[in-house]
Length: 114
Length: 115
Image (cartoon, rainbow over all chains, first blue to last red; front, side, top):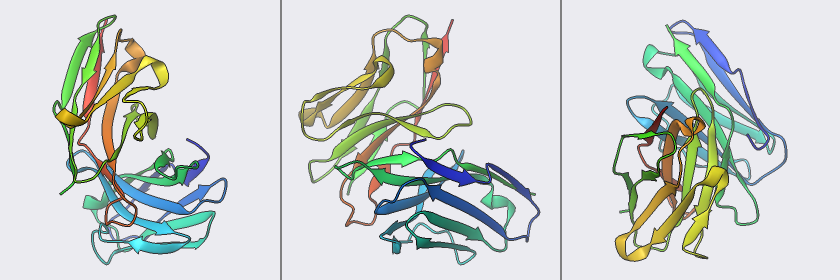
């Protein structure tokens, strides 16, 4: 997983509750990405950051979703309030290497909203 | 518009036989191309990448892919399938980080390996 830690690995919550997903790359980097994966829609880019600044959040589904990156080694994706259709696996990824083109993914957080 | 198409949603092969997973892309630029693999309940792992060097790229676990500009293809192959190769495979194209979508993912091809 190239040193990307995601927590929690599994989350079960009830509709209406706030959910916070966390991503911690082990080493500093320039870019960080949040993806969502579902059976119906496949892998979708939600948002990405460059030097802790959000560059493109056009993939964020709606205002219930928000993401922050307070420093180079930590990012959060928050859903408030959560809905059953938010159930998915959420991946965090970083750019790695001198070419800055290869993305390395964390293990993902499997979210189930009841 | 840039896009990537994986021509098969599911491929089934017998153990020991060759694997071919097909990928075509559409781009106005010379892209960088990747194949990622995802095993059940796991994250995505990089198999190999092409970045305008040699057109035949060798990756991990015996996989390789050939970039064919004339056909706009980047098919993934392996001479002999193992049971452990059963997974979801994604063809991915990188255009530019200054664009709206730095990576474009294919829909994925699920590879089944039959004993």
